[in-house]
Length: 387
Image (cartoon, rainbow, N blue to C red; front, side):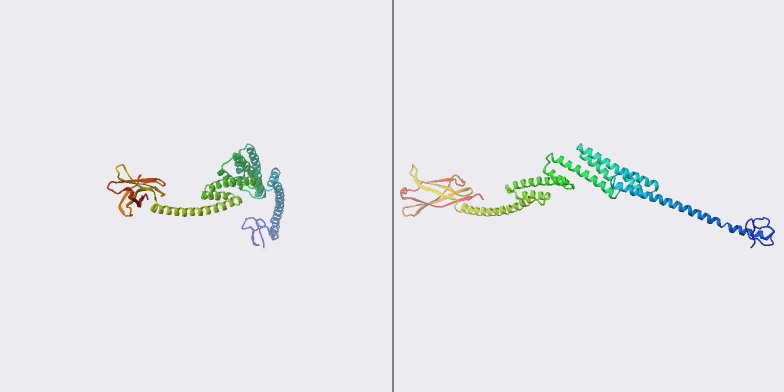
C-alpha cells in the first residue's frame, strides 16, 4: 500500500498530490513506501520510554523502601530507649525516623508521648517539692493533671509511667494520713480515714489501716461495754454493729456482740420474772388492801367525869395504799354476852397512810349499866381505797 511520505496518509498510484496534506507526491513509487518504514521505527520510542519509567520507578521504590526500613529501625531503637524511660535518646531516634519517612504516624505519636512524658517527669518532681512543704492537696492535683495528659496513650511505656505516678500519689496520701492522724482525729473522722487508707495499695498504708481499725475496735468496745453496764443493750448492739462495719473480722467485737445478746436475753427473762412477781405482789397487796387493810390495835370502855360510857380505840393501816373513811362497827354486851347496843364510829384522821395509826372515840349518854358489867366487841371495820 502506498502512503504519503509527508503525512503518512494512504494515496493511490495515479495521484500526483496528497489529498490530506496537499504536498506533491514523488514520482518514484518506492519513495511512497518509505513512510511505512519510518513509521515502524517510531514504535521504539514508547518502548524506550516505558523502560526508562520502569527503571526510574524501581529506583525510587528501592529508595523509598530503604528509607522506610531505616525509619522502622530508628523507631524500634527509640522504643527500646522509651521502654527504659530514656526519653531524650528516644526522642532523637523518633525524629530520625520521621526524617526518613514522613507521615510516620507511629513515630509521630511516640514523639508526642515523649514530650508529654518529659512534662510528667517534671510534674512528679514538682509534686515531690510540694510534699516536702506538706502541701498535700497541691501535690495530688499536680499528679492528677499529669495523669490526665496520658489518657490518649497506651502501651507498656505508658503503663510504666502511670505506675510511677500512682506510686508517688500513694506516698503523698500516706504522708497526708500521717499528718491527719497526728492531730488526734475524732472517731467519725477515723472511720472516714480508714476507707481512704484502705484504698491505698502500699505496705505502709496497710499498717495505718491496721492502726486505725484497732482504734475503732477499742473505742467501740469501751462505749458498748458502758451501755451494757447500764442495761442499755439495744444501744450497745447498735454501737457494736457499727464497729463491725469497719472491722468485720474483729474477734474482740464479735465476742462482745455474743455477750450482749446473752446479757440482753438474760435481762429480759429477769425482767419478765420481776414483772410477774410485781403483778403477784400487787395482787396480794390489793387483796390485803381490800380485806385486811386495817388492824385493830386496842379498844376499851371507860367513863368520863360525868359518868358517861366512853368507847375509845386505836387502829393501824397495814395497806400499801392510803385508805379513807375508816368506820368501826362495835357492840356493847352485858354479863351474859348479850348485845344490848351497837354503834358505828369513824376513825380520825380521815385518811390513813401505810403504817399510820388512827383513833376513834364515842360517848354514850343514855347507858345506865355499871361499866364493870359492860363488855365491847368490834364487829367490823370498813374503809375506802383511792383506786
